[in-house]
Length: 67
Image (tube, helix red, strand yellow):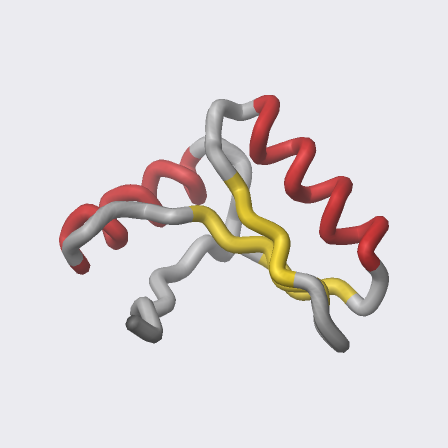
């Protein structure tokens, strides 16, 4: 959902996602990344990204799992 140079930016987005009913994960590092698990299949993930975009989280996109 986003990458921020400061933990505060990531935290703000994570809180907004939580209030909207999503379960965000913040991955700390040089870039504090905010992710949302979107399903176990590509189709589920694409549908979730579309739903998120329609609910005000524009720019949501699918990133394949590294596992």
